[in-house]
Structures are given as structure tokens and as C-alpha cells.
Image (cartoon, rainbow over all chains, first blue to last red; front, side):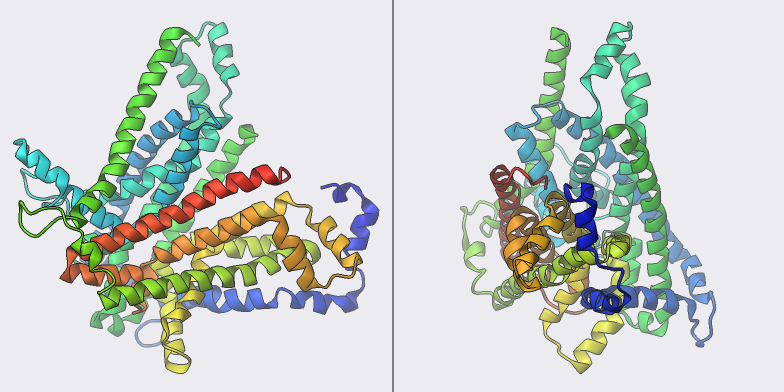
Length: 300
Length: 266
């Protein structure tokens, strides 16, 4: 930082003027670019190129027709639905929890523990998480059995746990902590003085939330909801562990195509599906970035 | 703040924390409870499922393999990413945005989508080079890139890299010395962060391993659950606690190191 203010030092540190040294300088980044070239850019290229090559080897969009089949379309809709519901619910509950954390002591033990725990739990998923819920509210689970002993049947109309509603519930387990992590900077940016200013101008609590805090927090809230959507949309391991029937949501269709015989007969379809998923996530994440930028205008 | 409003706020906070604690802790507790159940409805608590972990060879192998993968991925990440980031900051600042873009790219490519493109690559690797599961660490390195990049970026932003390296270079240090004895000791928190995040991500990874036909810890847990639910749940609890301890070390050691070197923001 001090170096930035010292032009002589900057000049000494960057002898880039001499063209002859340039190739040697570039050598330093070669391993990194070779590596990401092979393991990130090449697979991405394989997906994009593969989705555009039809079964007969010509360039066509025929692979995307496969997405139009009823069962494929259904899983697309299921994916969108479960991602939306778990994102909205996760955002609401996560925002409440974040608010409870943000109104406490900023250096307190409670806040530190909640934030560390949220960091751990937001990454949690897959087989382990599914087990946790099976052991809780599965038909052998402790909470289910306990409620049954007290005369309450959790599944009077059939067990919804091993279906999409159960999956949505499980997703909340990592969606809520993620919301806490990403939403708390916005809440921290709200200054108590703004509330005092509202009150000194005669505004009530409702006025404060409706005209001051609400509009300020809303873009961030919306952005974080989008991030949660992308997070749920990409999740695979939890669904694979919970849902016994294949292909209910998009990631499971990809799995089916990769592991089954039908997959090898239409290799382009898996790539087209993957590309469609990337496209959805890309759009959602761009909107998220846009909304975050709007929030950061007043945050700092 | 008026008195009644403060009381209402505290009551609201209490309710929220209580509900959150129930939602997040009960499933973990239930998992533990499940793993200590005996056979039959009224049998006593037993740790036989836990005792069976070491004698289930599939699990023992998978645990070792996953720990090795976590270690190799962390080391690869530090060996590849840190020097590149330092070099780009010092000598090729024009590339900074490109490197950042590439590192954050895996966030927008879901693992389940990336695996479609990476599968042909791994078929080729297993046919021509090795079918060892440790080859997975190359793919895992891609998955940890965004998280590792962010923590290393925060660490590098907090130190005066230019002054440190120029000082070391003018005293005759080579680039290896600069990296190992100047850069690394100046950002312990960021390096610890990046390594532990990578390790915990690898220990919990399922998508790549399952779809590329390798058996890591998570895949093995699922296989074993088909035979013995108790044992696999016991391993799941153990792996979860292990990841939890790793990340708790991260957050609390992070705080400790921060106190020692106040220049760091990470």
C-alpha cells in the first residue's frame, strides 16, 4: 500500500519495458494455465461442443430436442420448483436468523459460534445429511417415533419424506446457513443512526422497515435468494442419496445418462443437459452479481 | 432504544435461536442416537456399530483414501495456486482478472455438469496412465479453486507483497526462498483457511467420485449403508465431527493468528 505512493519503487518493481524479458515472465503462469486448460476449460469445451454434435456426427441442435421429452421436461420443472421453494424459504428463515445474529454483540461468542457453524453446515450435504434426516423423521427416526408414541402421525397421507417435499426440507439445512453467511454483511451495513433519524422525524417502526431498511436490504435479499437458487439447482449428492427412483430432478437425469446404457447411445444428450444447467446457473449468478453491486454502493 | 422494544427484540432473538438450534442440532443428535441403537425395539444402547468401523475393510480403505485425497489436493492447491497468484500480482498484473475469472468459474459450472465433460478425460487417464483413485485430486483441485482463491486473495491483499519480495530479492533471495520464507510465513491464516476448506470439501465430496466410478469415503458410506445402516451412520457421524473439528480449528486459529499479526485482515 505504501509502495503505491512511491513512483520510483513501482518503476523498479516492474521492469516490463524491456521486451526481451517478457517470455520468461510468462513462464511463471504456464503450469497454472496448462492445468486449468486440461481440467477445467477442456471439459467445458467437451460439454459445449458435444452438445452441438448430433447422433450422426453433424453439427445440429438435435440434442436439445431431447430436453423436450415429457419426462425430461418434468424433471426440469421439478428442479426449478424445488430450487425456488428451498431458496425462498431458506432466504426468509436465513434472513431472520441473520437478523438475530446481527442485532447481538458483534464480537460476542454467540455470533462467532453461529458464523463458524454456518460455514460448516452450508457445505454439508449428500449421504451424511440424508442419513441425519432419515434418523430424525424417517419412519424409524427418533422424532417420528416419539410423535407416534404421543399419538401424532407425521405422515397421515403417505410418507412425503422420500419425495420432493422431503428433499426440499433437507435442502433447507444447507440453504439457511448459506443465507446467514451471505446476507449478514448487508445487515451489518444498516446503521442504528438511520433508525434514530426515522424516529426523530416521527416515523414508527413500520415506517422504518417500509421506507428505510426494507428498500435498502431488498436488493441484497433478492440477490442472496438467487444465489440460494443456484446452490439448490446444482445440488446432486443429497438427491442421489434420498430419492430411490431415478431422474426426478435434473442432476439425477444427468446421472442416469452417465451411468446407464441409454446414456451411451445418446452421448450428446447428457452434454446438452449439462449445458442447460450451466446456462441457468450462469444467468442466475449474473443477476446475483448485479444485485450485490447495487447493495455494495451503500454498504461501504 | 425504548425499553419495551429492547425486550421484544430479545424475546424474538431468543425464539429464533431456539428454533434454529432445534432444526440444526436435532438431526445430528438423531444420527448419533440411531448409530447406538441395538437390534430389536427394547434392546440396550450399544456401540457395536461404532466398533464395527475398523473391521469393515471397505470403510477403513475409503477413510484412508479420502484423507490422502484431502492432503494431496491441499498440497497441489498450495503448490500451484499460491505461486501463480504471487507471480501474477508481482509481474503480470494484467492477468489478474483472468486468473480470478478462471478460479471463480467452477462456481457457475455445477459439479454434476462438469463431471459430464470430465468423464471422457478420466476414462482416458485410467486407460493410459493410472486407475488409482488418487488421480481424482486433479479434479478436486478444480472444485476447491474458488474457495482457495478467495482465502488466498484475502491473505495476499493484507500483506505488502511488493515490498516484502523486493526486500528479500535485494538481499539476494531466490524465488523459492521468497515463497517459502517470506510469503508463506506472512499469511498463515489465509494458507490455513485455504487448506482446511479444501480438505473439508474433499472429505465430503460425492458427485465426482460416484460418477467417475471411484470409491471415496462418501461413496463407501453409501455402499455400506445398504448392508449395515448402523455402521455407515456411525462413520457418517464420525466424518462429520472430523470436518467440524477441522473447520472449528480454522475459525478459532484464524482469530488467534489475527491477534498476533494485526496487519492481516483475512
